[in-house]
Image 1 (spheres, rainbow, N blue to C red):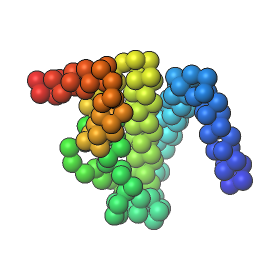
Image 2: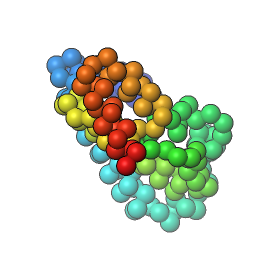
Image 3: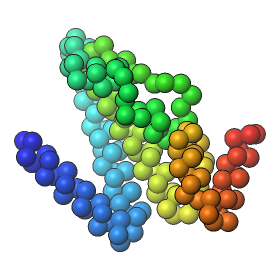
Length: 160
């Protein structure tokens, strides 16, 4: 299983690279569709097995990932504005699967923002990326008149 999963991930990566070379929107759209399918699949699984999942403890690796230490910028790379540290519940296996579903939903939002941005829309600005993402966005666009205008529009929107 691990062999197929690892090699499948490499194949998926190169498919996305190929799509990106042709048109970045293809790559982002394909990723968004995969992530949206994951949201649906996890959501259906959690709904269908809620009672059983709530009776089972979470695996230690999930507790470590969601509750301990540095979560590899868990709070910094979110599409929506993060105002405080996020530590989702992780008391049962239900919580673990719900957290995974929520993570996949964040990936859908991120891919949607990337699609819109590549298409010429200031999605990153409209969605109000958090401070780290704002810094990256500023670095990306500060050299162009369009980028400065988009950045200024975001600042005006935030200050309203």
